[in-house]
Length: 268
Image 1 (spheres, rainbow, N blue to C red):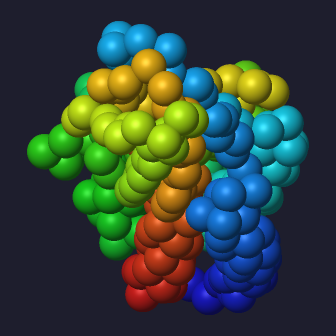
Image 2 (image 1 turned 180 degrees about the vertical axis):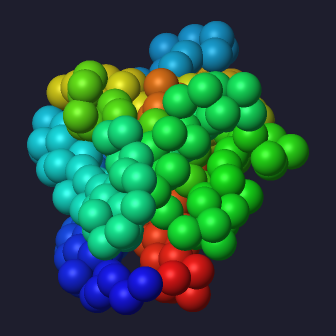
């Protein structure tokens, strides 16, 4: 059987082009965060010896960036996942024998459901092609939720039927520095500081992304705070790719799709 899968490889390459754009935009975004453009810190006067919080908040433009990142992620996920379906359909169409029912590249997390529904989609394919697709199923993995094919498939379903891929921002590294300034010439000292609240950020204007507590030892001082943040753009906890760095995960999907298309060629 001779089937040209080149056009589907070009489809994956189109998704990779969008990923290059996304990676460049994220690099700029992270640089702006690190340079202090994406958060606000406040001078907070200390009036007694209680621990008083100083809040670090995001600025409004962050939410717009994150929405755009989600759309770029869609432009990667859709062509990469659909290229696998397209390849199976093309192979099925070239078959001289029986054809599959709604031919596509099945993805199942249980063997029984693969046998009940998945096999009929690939019944028209060569034996070696069917064997490869069966061996690639997530149900054969020790932890299918970490399988690249499963995660890509779930993100694709989210994008088609529910919401665009959700992304969030998390802090990979945070350095907080504080300086106490006396207001009357007497010694001004501070106690040990703590940092709270860093994780996935709520991407709305003014949302708190971190909170610093510092112990004030005098009643005559002001404290200046600086936050140096190295950010990451992650898939949100609600997605199948929860907490994975977006560019890294999408690169994995592209690598997998290229490999699978190459393997499908060898089975024909």
